[in-house]
Image (cartoon, one colour):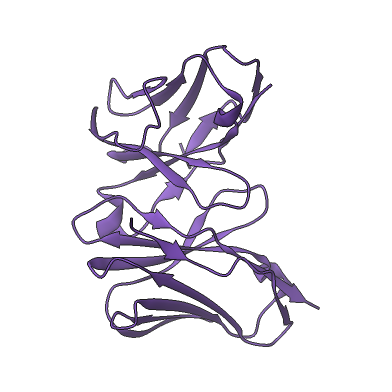
Length: 116
Length: 111
């Protein structure tokens, strides 16, 4: 596609429920990142994929969070037993190679998650 | 803990003036520095990157880096109302794909 696509754009759920957030990166981009952004804060790193594998998942806050990218393109962020503190905008970004060497991450519009 | 600090603002600048945004970072090993612009309710977009000491100019934007002082800045000349946004500073070590982000400075350009 022309840009990074994220769905849903908004998700409201109840505490304890399971949520999946989807990211479709720019075609051909091998690097994919998930970030979380709270109001008035910068993005917080969650996980980085290079191809199909999670090269670094050190930013995932706990074992309720998991992400996959089975075919090296679309990625899904999965959150189990959601808590109110999980409420944030979840941003996905992709880049042609490692984002740092090119300096440019292309972000999707984000998925706003609200846990009631 | 690696940190990137920015004044949260808001920074109010008259239209046509120069807007100066500042960022300091804690990790002396940092090698790559980026400025992203984020409009309200939108995602960040890269506007400038800088890797070596000195100035880098791109149109109305100039990024300045001083590694000795651990300081990076962004100057916006001839500020326009459309420049009103939050500007995020992001820093990375050369071999590390993880960007460390500041909280951003909100810039308001007054017509």
